[in-house]
Image (cartoon, rainbow, N blue to C red):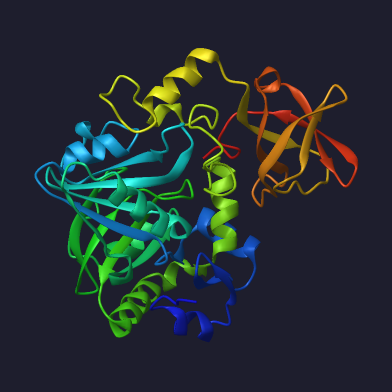
Amino acid sequence: MKTTKFYSVHQKLNAKIVDFAGFKMPIQYTSIIEEHKAVRSSVGVFDVSHMGEIIIKGEKALDFVQYVTTNDASVLTDGRVQYSLLCYEDGGIVDDLLVYRINQNEFIFVVNAANKDKDYDWLLKNNKFDVEIKDESDEYSLLAVQGPNSKAVLQKICDRELNLEYYHFFYAKIAGNDALISRTGYTGELGYEIYFKGDEDTAIKIWNSIFEAGKEFDIKPVGLGARDTLRLEMGYCLYGNDIDKSTNPLEASLGWVVKLKKNNFIGKEALLRIKEDGLKRKLAPMVSHEKAFPRHGHEVTADGNIIGKITSGTVSPIIEKAIALGYIDINYASEGTQVNFLIRGKEIPATVTKLPFIKN
């Protein structure tokens, strides 16, 4: 198992460590609920250095990005980020990713840790534009600083004005070290991502500088457990739960990142057919006021029939209700429809709602 450059910090903080995507990662430090609420109310720091960074370079870098991703990367300018997907020829999802445009000849793909090797092979296999594709994941460390006080914390140790718009990035120094700073986030709160290279001493120096700057805001380290509950409150998809090779972007409600009018891209023909044939199921957000804990794999019922399955579920620490995403029969996927979570043989009443589950 790999470790990030912050592993000794996690150990010192007595984090509960789990094996995740080939890394030993902190699932929680104190409690998931406490860490979750810290991000919603003030500021928290996530070590997400396990994520993959794949560099695309060459004269036809943009052509390549357009061919392998579903969104329209031609609208990007230098310093902008785009959420996108890699799809198989049949429309199934290889991965969801962030596309960073450095310039027209260089892009960075930030991909899910568990998919990094698969994604890298997929990109190499489909490189018909003779671009340079380099996996630099092991060189990068990545911290996400998230929450309403994140800007106030980072501004103390950043040498540039943190006036970043959403889905933009720039280069700056954090605690005296070169870094790429972006504003994307996976929590629904104001937040920043800090990508940097360097040894363990550099990484720990940056970590300590952030925590020193955040002391007055009661800054907290946050594990992958709260990262999951935070993203679920916003209805953000998690690869392996809500999307995978057996799901397509249209039924996953990700049609907004599929530009079917764009020139040929991998999966386009299949997705056009799927759209023409009409969806059979949809990833729907559901909420229950009953005491229940919906989990991945629980069935969803309506009118005495099984109509689908939950892909992600929890009890929201903020609204204190059971919330879930799940693929259900398209006929039941409209907002306001009454359905049930089938938990240990008992039907728990729930309602199809709209996202996000919490309103900021």
